[in-house]
Image 1 (cartoon, rainbow, N blue to C red):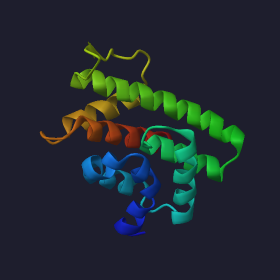
Image 2: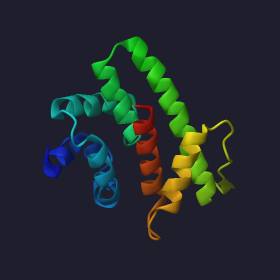
Image 3: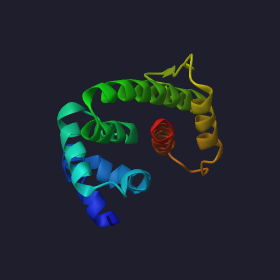
Image 4: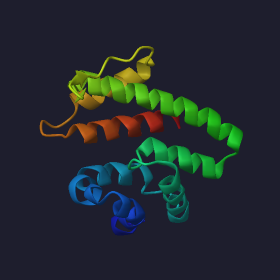
Length: 152
């Protein structure tokens, strides 16, 4: 699927989050396209459509990967894979935020405990290999994508 067709799959999300297309899609689009550009367009459309009803934030690569898995596997497998992926991605994202000095309401993000070593290595690699002007949200998206691919 080409990039124009792929971007069109996100039209409902852009309607719900208009700033994502204008402000963030230039950075996030290539990350999402790399992760899902070879997926079946109908499965992607279904996954993104269901996610509009289930989550309030713009979908992360992990959200989309979990939904694609749930559409192609049984409920039991989905719950096990989804829980583990979500927990590891959350820990890795928090670690990246901690290392990058991100603050919420003036409080710096704490370093998470119990993050798997392989996930910690992904975070360190993502931070070390980022361009100087790389926005934090792009680093977090790359970490999420790498974790989703590592567990998939």
